[in-house]
Image (cartoon, rainbow, N blue to C red):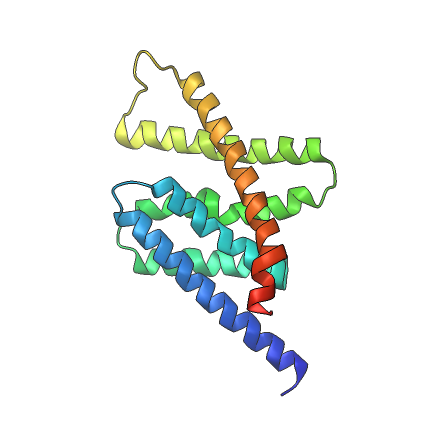
Length: 174
Protein backbone atom coordinates (compact mmCIF):
# COMPACT_ATOMS: atom_id res chain seq x y z
CA UNK A 1 0.00 0.00 0.00
CA UNK A 2 1.35 3.42 -0.88
CA UNK A 3 1.94 6.10 1.76
CA UNK A 4 -0.79 8.26 0.25
CA UNK A 5 -3.42 5.50 0.50
CA UNK A 6 -2.43 4.78 4.08
CA UNK A 7 -2.73 8.48 4.91
CA UNK A 8 -6.16 8.67 3.30
CA UNK A 9 -7.24 5.57 5.23
CA UNK A 10 -6.07 7.08 8.52
CA UNK A 11 -7.84 10.35 7.72
CA UNK A 12 -11.07 8.59 6.85
CA UNK A 13 -10.92 6.22 9.83
CA UNK A 14 -10.15 8.84 12.45
CA UNK A 15 -12.63 11.30 10.95
CA UNK A 16 -15.37 8.66 10.95
CA UNK A 17 -14.71 7.70 14.57
CA UNK A 18 -14.62 11.33 15.72
CA UNK A 19 -17.75 12.24 13.75
CA UNK A 20 -19.51 9.32 15.45
CA UNK A 21 -18.28 10.53 18.86
CA UNK A 22 -19.44 14.06 18.02
CA UNK A 23 -22.92 12.88 17.04
CA UNK A 24 -23.17 10.65 20.13
CA UNK A 25 -22.11 13.55 22.36
CA UNK A 26 -24.64 15.86 20.71
CA UNK A 27 -27.35 13.22 20.97
CA UNK A 28 -26.70 12.87 24.70
CA UNK A 29 -26.74 16.69 25.01
CA UNK A 30 -30.10 16.72 23.21
CA UNK A 31 -31.72 14.38 25.75
CA UNK A 32 -29.77 15.02 28.95
CA UNK A 33 -31.58 17.02 31.61
CA UNK A 34 -28.32 18.69 32.77
CA UNK A 35 -24.69 19.22 31.76
CA UNK A 36 -25.60 20.25 28.22
CA UNK A 37 -22.94 22.95 28.13
CA UNK A 38 -20.21 20.48 29.14
CA UNK A 39 -21.37 18.06 26.43
CA UNK A 40 -21.33 20.79 23.78
CA UNK A 41 -17.83 21.76 24.89
CA UNK A 42 -16.71 18.12 24.69
CA UNK A 43 -18.17 17.80 21.19
CA UNK A 44 -16.06 20.75 20.08
CA UNK A 45 -12.75 19.12 21.04
CA UNK A 46 -13.03 16.53 18.27
CA UNK A 47 -12.66 19.25 15.64
CA UNK A 48 -9.34 20.25 17.22
CA UNK A 49 -8.02 16.70 16.87
CA UNK A 50 -8.88 16.67 13.17
CA UNK A 51 -7.28 20.09 12.59
CA UNK A 52 -4.12 18.99 14.45
CA UNK A 53 -3.84 15.71 12.56
CA UNK A 54 -4.94 16.62 9.05
CA UNK A 55 -5.08 20.41 8.73
CA UNK A 56 -7.67 23.12 8.52
CA UNK A 57 -9.28 21.99 5.23
CA UNK A 58 -10.08 18.61 6.73
CA UNK A 59 -11.27 20.45 9.85
CA UNK A 60 -13.82 22.32 7.74
CA UNK A 61 -14.98 19.09 6.08
CA UNK A 62 -15.24 17.47 9.52
CA UNK A 63 -17.29 20.36 10.93
CA UNK A 64 -19.68 20.38 7.96
CA UNK A 65 -20.02 16.58 7.95
CA UNK A 66 -20.61 16.31 11.69
CA UNK A 67 -23.17 19.13 11.55
CA UNK A 68 -25.06 17.57 8.64
CA UNK A 69 -25.02 14.07 10.15
CA UNK A 70 -26.24 15.46 13.48
CA UNK A 71 -29.10 17.21 11.70
CA UNK A 72 -30.04 13.93 10.02
CA UNK A 73 -29.85 11.77 13.15
CA UNK A 74 -30.84 13.93 16.10
CA UNK A 75 -34.55 14.48 16.34
CA UNK A 76 -34.60 17.76 18.28
CA UNK A 77 -32.92 20.05 15.72
CA UNK A 78 -32.86 23.09 18.02
CA UNK A 79 -30.47 21.18 20.31
CA UNK A 80 -27.89 21.03 17.51
CA UNK A 81 -27.85 24.80 16.96
CA UNK A 82 -25.23 25.49 19.69
CA UNK A 83 -22.85 23.06 17.99
CA UNK A 84 -23.45 24.37 14.48
CA UNK A 85 -23.40 28.06 15.46
CA UNK A 86 -20.56 28.04 17.97
CA UNK A 87 -19.01 24.91 19.44
CA UNK A 88 -18.34 22.99 16.22
CA UNK A 89 -16.76 26.03 14.62
CA UNK A 90 -14.72 27.09 17.62
CA UNK A 91 -11.75 24.82 16.90
CA UNK A 92 -11.51 26.36 13.45
CA UNK A 93 -11.86 29.92 14.77
CA UNK A 94 -9.22 29.17 17.42
CA UNK A 95 -6.86 27.80 14.76
CA UNK A 96 -7.14 30.93 12.59
CA UNK A 97 -6.87 33.41 15.46
CA UNK A 98 -3.98 31.71 17.23
CA UNK A 99 -1.83 31.52 14.14
CA UNK A 100 -1.77 35.34 14.06
CA UNK A 101 0.90 35.29 16.78
CA UNK A 102 -0.48 38.31 18.63
CA UNK A 103 -2.18 37.23 21.85
CA UNK A 104 -4.07 40.51 22.30
CA UNK A 105 -5.46 40.38 18.76
CA UNK A 106 -6.24 36.67 19.21
CA UNK A 107 -8.38 37.34 22.27
CA UNK A 108 -10.05 40.38 20.73
CA UNK A 109 -11.08 38.30 17.70
CA UNK A 110 -12.18 35.32 19.80
CA UNK A 111 -14.27 37.58 22.05
CA UNK A 112 -15.81 39.28 19.02
CA UNK A 113 -16.71 35.87 17.59
CA UNK A 114 -18.18 34.79 20.92
CA UNK A 115 -20.14 38.02 21.33
CA UNK A 116 -21.62 37.78 17.83
CA UNK A 117 -22.75 34.22 18.63
CA UNK A 118 -24.02 35.30 22.04
CA UNK A 119 -25.94 38.26 20.59
CA UNK A 120 -27.55 36.05 17.95
CA UNK A 121 -28.45 33.49 20.62
CA UNK A 122 -29.99 36.12 22.90
CA UNK A 123 -32.04 37.52 20.02
CA UNK A 124 -33.20 34.04 19.06
CA UNK A 125 -34.18 33.16 22.62
CA UNK A 126 -35.99 36.49 23.09
CA UNK A 127 -37.91 36.06 19.81
CA UNK A 128 -38.74 32.37 20.02
CA UNK A 129 -39.39 32.04 23.71
CA UNK A 130 -40.10 35.61 24.84
CA UNK A 131 -37.70 35.11 27.74
CA UNK A 132 -36.63 38.14 29.72
CA UNK A 133 -33.96 38.21 32.40
CA UNK A 134 -35.19 38.34 35.99
CA UNK A 135 -35.66 41.89 37.26
CA UNK A 136 -32.80 41.45 39.75
CA UNK A 137 -30.38 40.28 37.00
CA UNK A 138 -29.98 42.63 34.02
CA UNK A 139 -28.78 41.47 30.59
CA UNK A 140 -25.39 43.11 31.02
CA UNK A 141 -24.73 40.93 34.10
CA UNK A 142 -25.72 37.80 32.22
CA UNK A 143 -23.47 38.78 29.32
CA UNK A 144 -20.55 39.50 31.67
CA UNK A 145 -21.02 36.06 33.22
CA UNK A 146 -21.00 34.44 29.80
CA UNK A 147 -17.75 36.28 28.98
CA UNK A 148 -16.08 34.69 31.99
CA UNK A 149 -17.43 31.25 31.05
CA UNK A 150 -16.17 31.73 27.48
CA UNK A 151 -12.66 32.64 28.65
CA UNK A 152 -12.65 29.58 30.88
CA UNK A 153 -13.82 27.44 27.94
CA UNK A 154 -11.03 28.81 25.75
CA UNK A 155 -8.49 28.05 28.48
CA UNK A 156 -9.77 24.48 28.89
CA UNK A 157 -9.75 24.07 25.10
CA UNK A 158 -6.09 25.13 25.08
CA UNK A 159 -5.33 22.65 27.87
CA UNK A 160 -7.04 19.89 25.89
CA UNK A 161 -4.99 20.69 22.77
CA UNK A 162 -1.78 20.63 24.81
CA UNK A 163 -2.75 17.35 26.48
CA UNK A 164 -3.65 15.84 23.13
CA UNK A 165 -0.33 16.90 21.60
CA UNK A 166 1.74 15.74 24.57
CA UNK A 167 -0.04 12.52 25.61
CA UNK A 168 -2.96 11.30 23.52
CA UNK A 169 -1.36 11.72 20.12
CA UNK A 170 1.44 9.33 21.09
CA UNK A 171 -1.13 6.75 22.20
CA UNK A 172 -2.99 6.96 18.90
CA UNK A 173 0.25 6.82 16.85
CA UNK A 174 -1.22 8.80 14.01
